[in-house]
Length: 170
Image 1 (tube, rainbow, N blue to C red):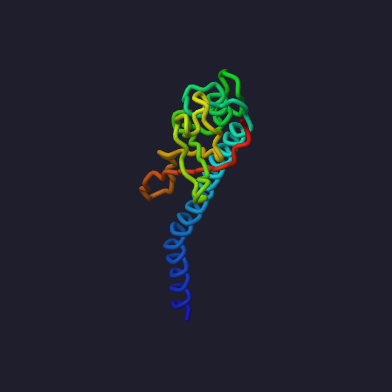
Image 2 (tube, helix red, strand yellow):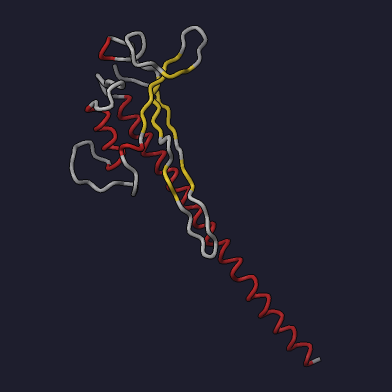
């Protein structure tokens, strides 16, 4: 009886030694999943803030990449400030070049939403075009996030959030 009790204690230690690394890996994986979700929603909130800022501005020329309002909106998305300066970015490795602004128009005949062309019959404000119906702000090439889980080599995950808001400016 006494020998049997010792072997059971040994089994418990062996089972614990086998399951602890698996449980720790699962725990760290859940934490990393939470971090990735947090980064995704932070990106989405950043893009939404930029889209709302642009959608409420007057006289924005969406067909000109160097438009002062669009540049101020990108600075706002990156740093939380519209003025130029040495403010720290809210998200590391997010740059203005990564952010894309697209304008969309509702087709009056079909009701479909499509990209608005930068021409006089489209949405080019410089040529007397009409204002867009929607502003779409996205990160088309993705924002890289690399999960870190011990003993596992994981690939980089590209987060591609996109936000569409109605245009309220002129």
